[in-house]
Length: 240
Ligand code: PGA
Image 1 (spheres, helix red, strand yellow):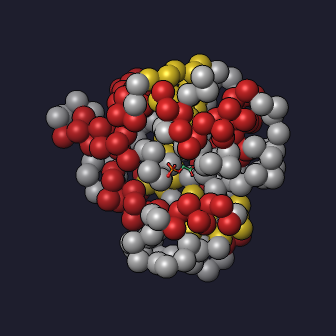
Image 2 (image 1 turned 135 degrees about the horizontal axis):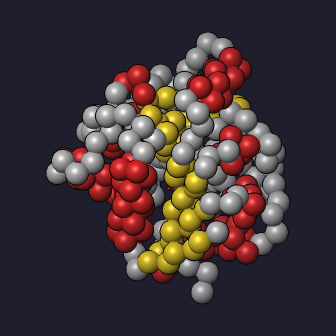
């Protein structure tokens, strides 16, 4: 695992976008795993800038998002699909057929989860997975206690996560109770992983994940077992 500490949030975002762009240039048909949340916003902005300047194309890129809420139509403003549309999908030349998303509004959620796994396998797996980390060490919506062998599955969101995510809701007063999340086992199959973290509120989770025991009670600690992980954090999040 390589840990890179940079000055601030913008530097985290710039470096993440640079590494992502490098991946796409080296393999134009890269399969990316992508997060939502506050942390990746500036990274997406930087990627859109690179696309607008004509130095990066997403023409052959394929994307899989980590998660979405159950019960929200993708067009709902609080869905993670809407977040991605606003921050990336509508601003670059990704092809609609290359954008994969777990549909939390599916009539058959178990089938939707199995289908998502099959879709990932059908394109040869994820080349580069970008992750954020929750205050409780979660990855995607895989909350503490999630099996390291888990595949895409239904999740009961923790009260912690629901409270923190409430600030991000534009229309809903309550955060949905359930979500679909890529599993930890699914994430571990990605060939490379980049974990992003910014701000002092992530310090404890990072410390437990990077220097504590590998345990299912801290989902991000599983990254210690993956052969190709880069952690990019800012000074405020850093362990020292
Ligand atoms: P954040 O979320 O980027 O909004 O802090 C990260 C996460 O919960 O995984």
